[in-house]
Amino acid sequence: MRSRFAALTTPHLADACIRVGVPVRCAPAELVALVPGTRVFGRVLPARHVGSVDVFLEAIESASPGDVLVADNGGRRDESCIGDLMAQEAASAGVAGIVIWGLHRDSVDITAIGIPLFSTGSSPTGPLSIGDRPADALHSARVGEWTVSSDDYVAGDEDGVLFLPADRIEELFTIAEGIRDTERRQADLIREGGRSLREQVNFSGYLEARAEHPELTFREHLRTVGGEIEV
Image (cartoon, rainbow, N blue to C red; front, side, top):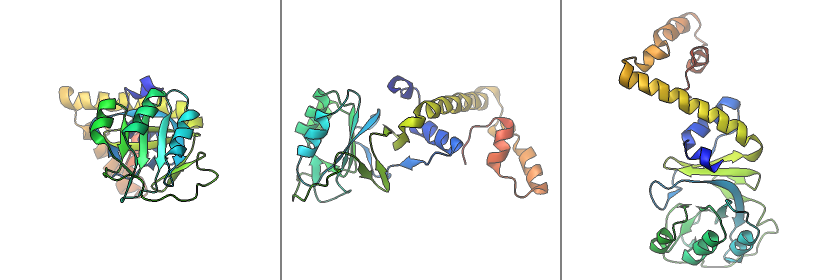
C-alpha cells in the first residue's frame, strides 16, 4: 500500500471517500509536516499522552514495521510531547512516521533523523505536568474532531493528513487510482489537446439540462460524462 500511495495524493484519497460515502476524516489544517514535501502512510499506532513519554515507549514496543505513531496531546499549544529521542526510538523500531495532535521539539535533530513527522508546530518545552493515564491510552487517539485507532490508516502529504478505514483501504486506493488517471488525462487534454475542461465535461449541456431540471447537480452530471471532479 505504501508504494501505491507514492503515486497518489491525499486529495485523490479524499475524493475516493466522497465517491463511496466514507466520511472524509481530515486532520485540522494546522497539522503539517516538519519538513515540507514529507509524505507518510501506514496503519495508525495510537497513543494518548498525559505528561509521561512511557506511553509512547509502550506503543513502540508493540509496533509492527510500517506503523505510524499517532500521538494525542489534546492539541495543546503550551508544551511539546515528542522530541529527538522518541523520534529516534520510533525510527529505529521501524515506525514509518509520527503524527502529533500537538507540538514537537528538537526540530533540527528530528530532521536529521529523517523520520516523517507531522505536528501543529514546535515548542522548546517538554511536558509541563503529569496526569492520570486513561486505561485505553493505547487503544485510540484523537486528532481534531476525529478518534482513530489501529482500525485506521493515516496518509499525509503536502495537502495535509487524512485517516482512512482499514477495512475499506483496498477499495479506496483502487478508486483513487482511477480518479488520478482520469484527472491526468483531462489535464493533458487541456494542456496539449486544446480541449478545455468545460468542453470535456460538456458544461454547456449541463447548463441546458439544469435549466429544465433545477434539481440536477453538477456532480450528478459529471457521473454521466465520466468526470472525476468532486464538488
